Length: 155
Image 1 (cartoon, one colour):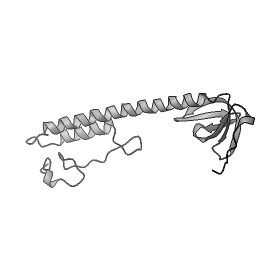
Image 2 (image 1 turned 45 degrees about the vertical axis):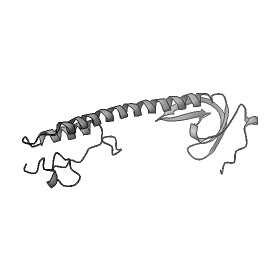
Image 3 (image 1 turned 60 degrees about the vertical axis):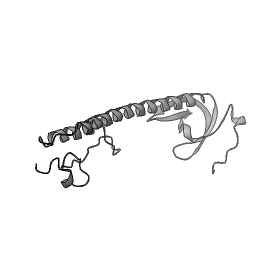
Image 4 (image 1 turned 90 degrees about the vertical axis):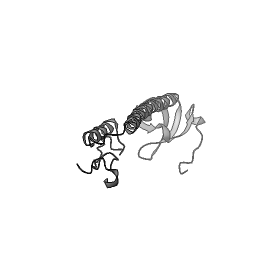
């Protein structure tokens, strides 16, 4: 433990409070550190600090503030995701009973009356007969098939 707390001897990529490196474990696959990872790192720093050179209280407060900011950003992100899904569902529900022209998941043109909508994995889907198309793939909307504007499918 002779290197612990000695900033000058710490290898690159380590905490300024510990010469040990810890590979972060992420459970969501995004590569971002989560709350649990942050707490593990903070606890590791506290466990491996030099008792004769305890962690600077300002650095500790800064880390707690970062943790708080991380929690708040995750909350905002969750709220924005819910809001986006609600907006998509609202927008898609406005198309029920309308005739649309769209492209399905197999890149085939689909034309017909929207009979229902759903949100699957955060994506609004329109149900046209036995086909399902994403809201973002709609190319034209009209009150009936005769009023449907001509859309160049190659564009």
